[in-house]
Length: 83
Length: 182
Image 1: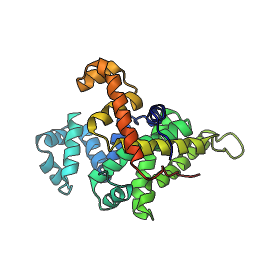
Image 2: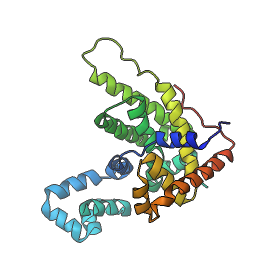
Image 3: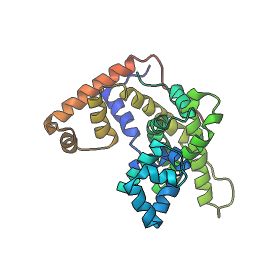
């Protein structure tokens, strides 16, 4: 078993810096993207009425647009709208 | 008790979004480090590889034969995509483009670093935070003190105490870090 003295630990902890937060967030959103998040965000950018409807009532607007009830997707859309 | 890789992968297979977020969180540093340290990709290329690795991992997770083998599987996937990127960038040059020298050694070192990082996850949150900020995020004593509302003069001694706890945690584990292999 290796002797993990302070110096060795310091080197090993420095070896794994954090990946950029935006990259991590994008990768974490892959399941949501597959369920339509990217399309919704794109449409909200291009379609002002759709964007305003989403801001007013995200859940209902998504259901009216044909998306299944999905709390995680709804929350992610809200987060994108507020960023 | 930290969830094992196999348990986490099993939850991902069930379509648990939280599990997927945790999986990305657990391996993001590892994938990033392979791309920028072992293959020395530019940030732009590394970002493309990073996203592609996780996109393919998500797509192909149901095909993974051994849930506990997620780390070496991700390492192999990252290696292959890094090499594809290097080859695509050198299309005009004739002949096979080899892997950069020292990739195996670097990945072995990253495997060990990940092992230590996993042990870090078992420490109290104040230790995790302070060690991660100082060593992995390269923050100054002053920044850490400001962020954690601690006197900057106490940071060095806190780091030292937390390293002792980390060492004890590692010594309490009976397993050695597994290598991803070449």
